[in-house]
Image (tube, rainbow, N blue to C red):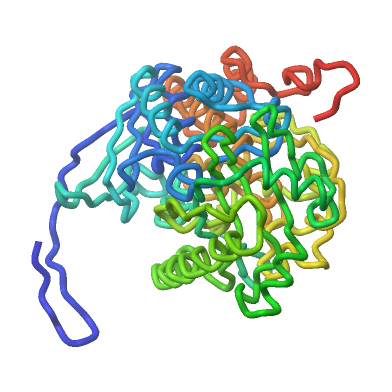
Length: 482
């Protein structure tokens, strides 16, 4: 397609009619973990399902952004998520009571296998650029790929883009970032280091507990079980910053996703603030700054951190990790009060858990993460709190034919800090995919399914998803909490 330059400020595109190249009962947009779960659930429940993804692989935050660890409520993963964890374990994974390190490459293969087994179709290398509307009903999406610009249609759409892109294009109301100032959580370039002396790393942690978080669910030192997570190195970071070797906003280092028998670990330490993940310019700046920080942190690890003397930076994440952008405003807006009071909803479709101290920020936009004022990282042994998410959080206001799942559901900025973990996002995807299929089967709009929530809940339970505490493995262990 050719466009004509009008002047230095505008280009004119000729009008055109787009071919409809794919149709489906349920069209899932975004192949991160919420999208994978939504597509598997929809296909298993009998819907003709199409999953669209911009990358050449699936997994989103786990693979593209390389946050390859479940670190809250691991035994509480149920449903399709439980099947995925079991499959990853058979592929050589490790699982503990509160920690699951994940091999991103194993996840990519496992997700593809489970989608194929469910009968879902997949279209990758495809970027979504707009919504197809029929009045106030979302009917499909506009995409671009090597085959050109096309339209894809679905009876029900599920926005799993993470940024609420489809909802935004369709005209659903959204809230950008934190209420009041629209600031968003920082972005991160994760990176993997190899050739780590795990024994040396563990010896330092055991000899210097004051240099790490005191929370045993945050700081995990169980190498004999293949489970290691370090959150701290406070004094070493301070020393390196004093000599100008680390960037100003670095206050601690998190060593995650440790695979003990390989001597590898993921480093979660880069932080880029005051960026908007819905702007290409900001994403570019965050990516470049994050990669610069990654090499700085890797040099710090080799120089200062016992066990890393001969380690090397093996790889950086393909995409910058975006923690927060749009929150789609739905029929219910989830709040922190809903969460910390464990509010019950008649339309609950997700039950999840997180280790967090109520009232403390999670990846605050205010650039003090890990600093001495961050009691969550420095001093608190936080409770694990169970909470519920109602179906109405998945139903955008004003727009029909559309559901949303993942970190862009209808919730406040603070509530997002609780729900954005993988175990919760997986459950959201399964709930949305199941509800979408039942809506198609009943020839109803997703909004109209609010009157059939018992059917959705019964289907989720029949497929292994926990909706009450008695459904979760950790609740069945006498004297044990999450």
